[in-house]
Length: 627
Image 1 (cartoon, rainbow, N blue to C red):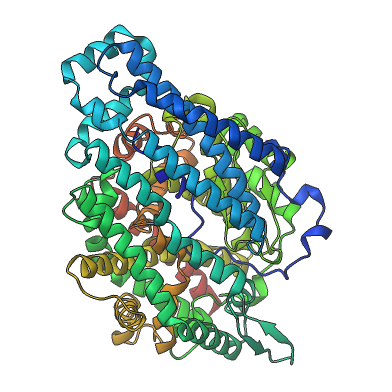
Image 2 (image 1 turned 90 degrees about the vertical axis):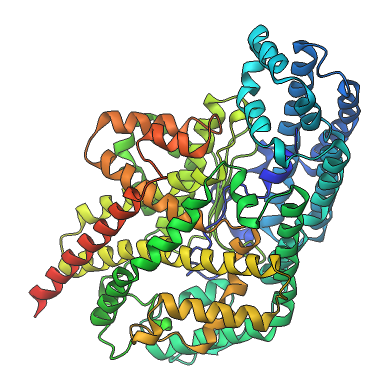
């Protein structure tokens, strides 16, 4: 098979592209009770056990070679090869997962950085050993392949995979070309790895002095805290200091981003695609029009976004909204903190519409230590879910600080985790991986359930106004900001395809211009200060090849699906749970159509705009009562 795990593992279930809020002080990991730390012994009991499993994996690799040149001989030979590679994929995923989760606990650990290099090398070797499979299948008469599928029921597990091979025939190389591409995978993750280690372990974050005289380090946690300060000067100073320090290393970040984009251009050319966009979308069989229509629809609806910004300005009571005001609490007195235990109870209550089976998985996640809860020194920022340890269970990383955004972030990652769990439970490994295009739907769906639960409890106008503001922030970030990043990302790929040079200064200029367009800078809607030009350096999803647009498409899809579920439509809930259990058994667009939403139309986006405007109408009514 084409390195299916090697390429897909780099995605996992990705963290929010805007880092999850981290408002708590960092903790000493050794002092945190075990119940708040994930238990990696479920994957391997020790590093020694991992090394033993790795050695056994290496010993199995030569068995692939015996199938080379024989796949056309019989259905049994074809099945034997696919089954072996599938089994090795599963084992490799487990090896990969243990190392990456271990490293993410403390990215300063040189021992796990070394193991990560080992597993990356192993993945490249595995890809090279299995590189002959797809070219050889493509060389078989399609009628013979169909006869194999009909005569041997065991091959049914790989039907979708083989259909997909035929669909991608024009973009699959010869055996030697596939070996070269597999070897290139060893280098492909380097820009992302350097970016992650630099920002999470080695970056010299600045410090600022608060109004009370306290010094605060503006790492990811401190910056998130300061940008939510009710003190406007503190927000302004924090943004300038944080972005300014990022800009000091603009040449380095520019070189990293250029290397990342060159990698994408290499794969585009190696597989003979016409563009990086076509290359990125074809893996999930997504029409290019889905991407272009999103950008067009968002640009046509910037007026709705600007209405949101003007509403934020009105509630904050500022003469002119600035970019540093965008995370400020709308109603400072209504903001409250939630302990981790309180958040757990709110989440369990919010997910009730999905039934007892769904709730049982969430309870297992909390009880069986699937979740790594608190920020600690060296721990990866943000949050994600990893469901690649197929025979174990998913793992969830959050950096819980206690505010609503942290609780929402946990709901988001649990959406990923439950989808992985259900897919792994109901699908064989070969079809258990959710396509990239749909992985964010489950997470956004959970966020919709949470805000609905919280709004039903909020009776006080100020509390309700704060909650509705949080809900609107979701539309602003997940639709408009995600599309802003997507437009920026597409433009820099197109620049690279034309041979234009990508430098820190070039990227700064482009990012600032697109951001000013989206936020209405030239219409006096929101002033986008010059400091923002370097914000792109802190967006990790730019290292995942045109991924960010899927937050917007997933948000609109989840809005349509959650509206049906929250109305009590039992048939809609059943279809949604079936969708969560479907893994990668079909293409993304087809999976979502079965769930009840057609992403090839503008209807989901139009519904999201209606919901956004409806929310703003309610907020304006509350403000009207306050006069």
